[in-house]
Structures are given as structure tokens and as C-alpha cells.
Image (tube, rainbow, N blue to C red; front, top):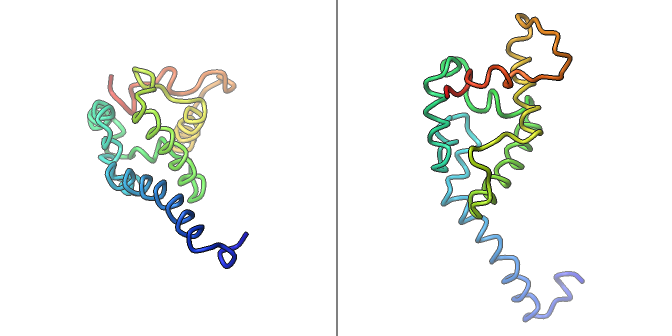
Amino acid sequence: MTFSTLSCSGYLIWITLTSIPTGFVAGTFIYSKGYSYMLDDPRACANCHVMNDHLKSYERSSHHHVANCNSCHTPEGFIPKYFSKAVNGWNHGLAFTTGNHPWPLKLTDYNKKITQQSCMKCHQGILQTNHNDKVNCIHCHSSVGHIR
């Protein structure tokens, strides 16, 4: 079926059925300041009140002057970075809207891998480990990016 074969009432139903979810998603995106996640400002991560402590601990950390949230929590490259942001934005929005999230917050395996790659990228010239990928950096250095 194409637009040209839809009747006037069918067209109105189609418009209504697509406009309601689109409006809901757009409204939620604007209300939650979702556009701010496109930037590198760490305050964007605290749009959700449960992240305020994480922002404060980041601001006191040793990485505060050399990295932002995206430096450690998103992969390199335009497409991987924004794909990761889209996946995490969807998951975070769903979790916090429904209240279905662990406390304290935990990194997923996907995000642990990204964080590990970020550590390795920035510290590649000075790392001396023989962990053979069995232990990731944040296992021992969890307070580097966020003071606990």
C-alpha cells in the first residue's frame, strides 16, 4: 500500500498513529535535554539526578583536567561514538523512566570494554601489565575517574 492508494481516513489514521509516538519521543528528548548528550560537556551526564554524585566525584578526580565523560565512556570514531550514545541513551532513558536500574549503578560488559579501550588508548605508552585481558583497569583503578 502506498500513500497514493490510502483513503483520506486511512491517511489520517496513519498520521495519527505515527505522530503520537514521534511526539512522545521528541517531547521526552527535549524535556530530558537529550540534545545535550551530543556535546562533550560533563554536566550533560547529570541531567538525570542519579548521576549527580558521579559528576561530583569526576570533578574531584585526577582525570578532571584531562578527560571528559566521553573520553572514557564512548568509543573512538564518529559512528561508534554516536551509536554507543544512542544505545546507552535509550537504555538509560528506559531504566530511569521505569525505575528498573541497579543501585549502585554498574557498567555493562559493553561499557566496561569501551572504558578498558579508553584506558589503553590514553596510557598505551606507559602501561606495563601482564594481565592478559583477565583483569580490566577499573578493577584496580576504579577511583581514578570517579573518586569514591
